[in-house]
Structure formats: C-alpha cells, structure tokens
Length: 262
Image (tube, rainbow, N blue to C red):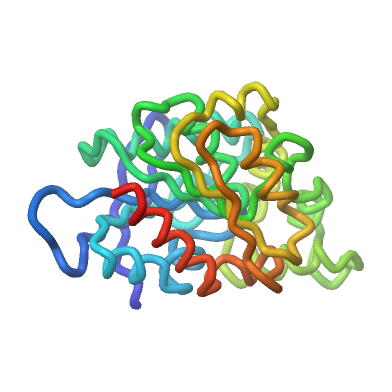
C-alpha cells in the first residue's frame, strides 16, 4: 500500500504529522478507529504502512489514524530530553484524537509506541476502547526498553566507529530513514519511564500483548498480561523484535482480538 501524504496537527508545542484513512469497505454507522503509535527511530510509514498494517486494518472495516511521534518522521524535532517524557507523548496521541474529533479509539503501539500506548490507557482510560501492545512485555515494568547505549550510537561521528551490533543496527536504521539523530538521542533518553505493577493493574481496558518468541528486548508477554484484569498474551513464533512487527500471526491475532470486542 502506498503511503498517503501526511497532514499536520498543532498539539501544544509540537506539530504532529499523521494520516487518517477511512475503511476500505464502509459499513453502516460510524467505523471504529484504530490509532497506531510507532516505535523508536521509525515512523508511521515504516512501522505501519510498509508492513501493510494500514491496509489490513482498513480492509477489516476500521478507520486508521497513524502518527509520527515527536522527534520522528514529519513531526517536530525537539533536541531537549525533557520534551520526550512518555506521558507528554501520550498527550500528543490524545491531542490528535481531539483534533480529529474522535472520542475513543483502539490504541495500538509497537516497542516505544507500546510504552506510549500503555501510558495513554493509564492516564486517559476513557479515550481507549482497547489496548494492543506489540514488542513490549514485562519490560514495561522491569526495564526501559532499548539500552541507553543507543543514544550514544546516535551521537557517534559515524556508524563505522560502532562495534556493538545493536548500536550499529539502530544507527543504520535511523540513517536509512533520514532521521534527526540529535532528536533521537534526546528521545531515547527521555522515554525511560516504567510503570509499577500496581499501575499496570489499573489498566482495565481489554488488552492484547504481542511479543516475538525470539525478542529479548520486550520481556515476557504472559507475565505482563497476568498483571492486568482483562489482558491476554500472543506469542509470535520465531520472530525477533524487528520481524515480529508485520508478522502474519501478529496481524491475525490482532484482528481476532478486535473482532471479539464486537
């Protein structure tokens, strides 16, 4: 599916780039919305359009809204760590719903986007119809996602001086996407917040936690789901943190979960 031209919404101090796609086969009444929140160093195009998530969801009858997080894609690039506090990024997501006049949405995030999505569900539960966390399990509570050395990798003079494979991978990925490296360094240092077990337990919306079985970055999906009153885990067989995103099992599991909600 080709990427539509994004629009811009002014939300606080940030301009947030987004796309808003209608269902491919409209049914009667107002379609439910799925809000997609991408991961670190990615964008709505890389995380959701290219792996056909937008096509999958619109064909299933959903309105799909996908944003570029601040510091990414076409959105404002801040260089101050304080501008990337996770609750602030959750406020961007809700601000976009306000901008579009959407009272409530299924909120789906991957990796850093899942962390933002979890905060959105905790802080704005009335705006979240369901929560879909991809690429993030128990490390929402114990751990802060990607290692802090990724920020150092963004500030290195070039990818050639990096020896750590994870650092090299993320630096190369960021360069491939034409990213603002200084903004990404600030972002990864700013989004290091975790939730307590008690806070996770207060997320009462229906939740699906989807993690690849070869993903050491995310932490256990089943352990995180067990902390929530209405959550289940989905294992994505044989997939690591990067390949689990667009996996067919992941898509099928998400669609089945959404269908069950009616």
